[in-house]
Image 1 (cartoon, rainbow, N blue to C red):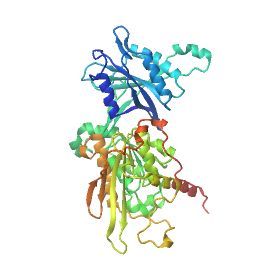
Image 2 (image 1 turned 90 degrees about the vertical axis):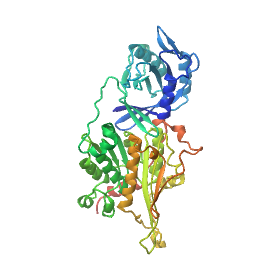
Image 3 (image 1 turned 30 degrees about the horizontal axis):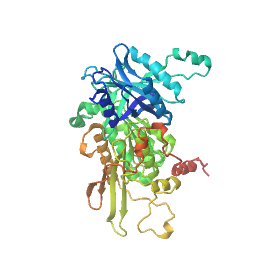
Image 4 (image 1 turned 45 degrees about the horizontal axis):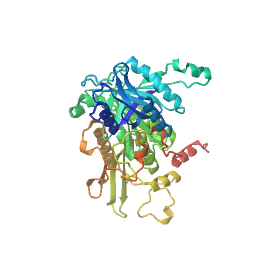
Length: 506
C-alpha cells in the first residue's frame, strides 16, 4: 500500500514559520521543532498520514543542546498527550528542522540520533495513548524538502513483552510523497532513500500542450491520480479529455449501465455496448485506455455508488475528485471527504427547462464549482442543501425530472430530464480547465469559486460566495481523515438496481 503525507497549505506555512521564521524563542538554535496531532485516511491502495493541529511549544519546551541535539521536554510531550487523549483518532508527529543548504529541496535524511530519540520518545507516547493512534516523525529542510517516517510499534500483550518493549525496534516506513493542499495542489518527493524516476510522457502526442505548460507540467499530469464519480454525459467526456491530456491514472466510479436512451450523449460508447447494456465504468475504461497519451496510463473501473462506503474508499486513493453525479446525497459525501481527507473536489452539471409547445429553452444553467481546503464548500456555494441531501438519502426517486407541462397522471412516472451533448461538453471543458488550474496554475484567477453559464442568455458568471459561511462546520473536521464520520449510507437507487438485477429471468 502506498503511503502519502498530506497537509494544508496553511499548515505548511505555519510549520515553516515556526521552524525557520524569526518568531522563535531562541533564534540562534541550529534546529527547531514542534509537536502536532496526526490523523490517518485509508483508501484501498493508499494510506495517508495527515498533519493535524500544531501544538505550539511554550518557552523552554524545545531546547538545543550542543551535546544532545534538539530536546523536546517531557512537559511538552505530556501537554501534547493530554491534548491528544481527548481527540478521537489523533496520534502524534514530532517535527524538527534541518538548517542545511537553502537550495536543496530533496527529502532530508534523519540522523542516527534522530532515529534513536524517536524510538524512545514516540514509544512512550504510543504506550500512553489508546491503540490505533498513528506515530510519526518529520523533517523540514531549509531548502523546502520534507520527509516523514511512520513508526509502527507492537503493543505488548504480556508482562514479559512489556519488559522487552524498550529494546524492540519499531518498523519504520517513509512516506513516498508529500501532498500540500490549498487553492493549488502541490507534490514533493518524500522518501530520502528512493530516487524516484519521474513517470514518462509522450512528447509527440502531447507536443501541443507542452507548448503551454512545458515538460514539467506534462510529467506532473502523468503522475497524478484523478477519480471521476459519475460517468454520464459529463463524466464520460471528462474521462476522455483527461486521458488525452496525459493524466496517468483514472478511477472511474458509476453503477449505471449504458442504455439506448443515453447513447446520444455517451461520447465514445458503441452500439454494441448499448445492446449488451455494458456498465458505464467498463465502457469508459475502454475509451480512456484507447485514447490515453501517457505511456504508463492506468484506468480502474468500479461499479459502485460514491454515496456508499465501498465507493468512497476507492476515491480516497486519488489526488483529486471530479463529481458529476447529479445527486445531492453524493455531493454531500464528496463535500465532507474533500475536507476530512484533504482531496480537492470539482463538481459540475447541467439543468435544462424546455418551453412548452416551443423549441425555445425556457431556462438552463451549466455550472462548475470547486471545494476542499482553501475553497468554499459545495454547500456554502449553494450547490446542494441539507434538505436536498436528506431527501436524496431517503428517497430512491429523488431528482427525477418532471416536465413543465406534465399532467397529474404523469407525476408518478419516471420521466427523463432534457440533456444534450453540447451542454455536457461545455461543463466537461470547464471542469478540465479547473483541473489544470489547480494542478498546473494555468489560469490562477479561475482556480476557485462557482462558474455558472446561463444557456438562455449565453452569459457566464461567477458566484458571489468565495468563503464558507461563519456557521459552516467544515473547518471543524479539516484533515481529520478516517476519524471524521462521512455521511455515507445506502444509495437507494443503486440498491434498487442491484435488487432488479439479482432477480431470476422469467
